[in-house]
Image (cartoon, one colour):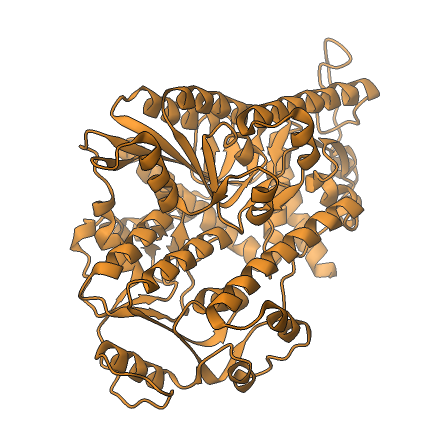
Length: 607
C-alpha cells in the first residue's frame, strides 16, 4: 500500500508541477502508425468476407463513433487495431441474417477488444434478431466472465472447456476514495455542488459512500444484475430466482456444475465444438455434444465482415437523408479533439444538419459522462433550433449522463439501452488548494500582486474566502436551475418532477424509462429506423454521418498524438492499474480549475 501511495502521489505531483511532452515517443510511434495506415484506410469493400460462419471473438472493439475508432495502438506489432462502430456491427448482423453464404454465428471471446455495456447489450439484441433468421448460434469458451456469458447465453448451444470456468456471482461496483492520499499530499479541496446524489466530489472529501450515494450505487448494481439475469433466464429457460440463488450460494464451481444447472449445454474441447459447428453447417441434427467431425469450416470475423459491408449503410447522394451525429466523449468548451466533444464543434455539426434541406431527420448518438456546463448549454441551444425544423432522435450508448443528458433533453424521442448510465441531473465545481503541497513537499512559495481582494480568485495556491465560496455556489445553483428547466421543457414535466429525480442521481436505462427520462429501449439502428418513420421518408432515403471537419494532415496528427498519449500513459496504467482512471479524472478537474461541471460522479465499471 505504501508503494501505491508513493506511485499515485508521484504521478499527481508530476502533473501539478508540469509534464514533459514526449516527442521521442511521438517519432517512435509515427513509424508504426504510418505502416498501419494502409490497413486502416484500405477500401472497405476490399476486405475478404468469404466464410460460412461469422465469428464474434472481440478481436476488434466496438465503439460509438468513427472518430474514436483509431484509439488502439499495438506497441508489439507497431500496427493499428481498428475498431468497428456499433452501427457497422448492427448492419453486419442484419446482412448476415439474409446472406446465403453465412450459415451461422460462432461466439468465442478470446480477443482484447473493448466495448461499453451498452454496446454489448446492443450486440446481444442484434444476435436475438439474427436468430429469427433460423440460422444457428454456438458459443464456446474456456473461461466465461459474467459479461461474456450474458452475451453468449443468447446462443442455441453454449459450450465450455472441461477445465474451464464460468463466473456467476452477482454484480458489484467499487468506488475508490482518496481523501487520505490528498491529506498526505497536503491538498485541500474546495467543493461546490447542487444535488443530494451529486457524488462526483465525494472521493476527494470522504473516506466512504454517503448514505444517499450508497442508495444510488446499490440501486444501479441491482438494476444491472436484474437485466443480466432476466436475459439469461429468457434465453436458458431458467427462472430468475434460481439464477440469483446460484450466484448467491456460489453453486457454479466448475463446468459440470454449470451443465447440471443448465447454464451450458456441453462440456467439450474446442475441436469437439468445431465438429458441432461443422455438423450444423451441413444441416445435421445435433442430439448431444459427442459429435464427430473435422471441424473444417470456413470462418470470417465479425470485424472483417462489418468493415466489408460498412459502405452499404450510407447514401450521401440520396434525395432524402437521415443524419447521424456523434457526441462521444467528455464535453469540453470550444473545439472537439480525440476523445472529447467540443461544444462549438458539435453545435456546428447540428447546425449543418438543420440547414441542409436534404436532411429530413437527425439522430444524435450520445456516449458521454458530461463535462462543461457551458459547452452543454451551447449544444442544447442548437438541439432546440434543430428540433423546430425536423425530427431529432437521441440514441444513448453506454453513458449519457449529466451534460450528456443535458444535450439529449430537447430531442423528440430518447432511446436508451437498459444498461445505459443516464440522468445525473446536477452540477458541481471543485477547486484544489495546493499551497501546502508546494510549500511542504517542494519548498515552493508564492506571492501575488493584484488590483483587488478577489482578482486572483480560483488561484490554486491560496484558501478561498467566504465571499468567493458564496459566489461560486450561487453560480452552481443558477446552472442547476437552468439544467432542470431545460429538462422539464424537453420532457414535458414540471420543475418539481425533474428536481425530484434529479439531484445528481444516476439512473440505469431501465429506471430512466420508468421515471420519464427516456422514452424506450433500442440501439442506434433502432433510432435511425424511428427517425425514418418520423420524417416519412421510408420509401426513399439514405443515411449520412456528419463528422467534425478536419483536413488530412490534421486528422493524421490527431490520430497520431492520440496514440502517443496512450503510449505515454502506458507506464502509469501499469503502475496504478484500476486507479489510473481516478488519477485521470483528478487531472481533468485540476485542468478545469474550479469551473462548474455537469458531469457524472465517476465512470461506473461493473464487476
